[in-house]
Image (cartoon, rainbow, N blue to C red; front, top):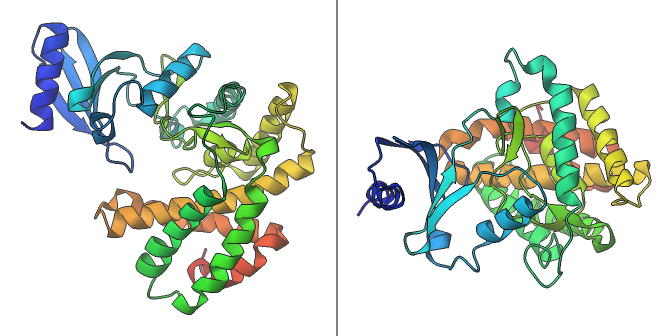
Length: 333
């Protein structure tokens, strides 16, 4: 049976009536597939995830983290029902108006207030604590994870997408610089819970409130990680003055919750190093989607993400050597 047929059966079993329509909608850069289902009872979202199909409800991270966020008052779509055998979840339909959609719209003037509201939500998420032997508190941005992301960039961006302009003989030296940067970022004493993909395409505005999606990869890391995802977003570009204001707003909110012992200067330092790593990681993902998965939807985000890098390189001496090695990619941005 096709996924759509499984979804139709799944929906009919739960509602005792057949769906009126099932339409596939664009998902993220993952193996998950999403469908909007319309029935006589309203509109819903079905998610097919092969990872869920291969696991169980008790070990499936989406369900574990959904329950955690819901328990702490974080707005996430309701779960109506699940079928682990078929890897299906039936979710509340929170619409398709993303934070991204505020840009170049009549609502754009409200962006500063909206972003402050979302940072308040982020700090509430980053305040969540739990048992460090259980997911998501047992996993974090350690050296292995950060280097996996740097190596992914090397493999798919440098050795494939940018192979015509990047000298592969520089890879060893660049990887050495990446290792030094990863070591700077592994500071468990400062770690908080992070969504891990907290950008404008993973925040829906539903009934005038932000709703978070795509949270299943949450893990521990520097609080700057999610702030970077939001402020140095690959999909939209904030006004620079607003970006600086939001860094200070995030820092002060962290301090008010006693989640940060850094000075503001330290916060900004780690923000820039983390932003470099996060944007490098995103470029690797976009290159992989473009060249390996033959998915062109992310290619146009490579250039604006590259354009951020010079800002960090010029600001922090720790990035200068990596910046010189990456210069062939950065020329023109």
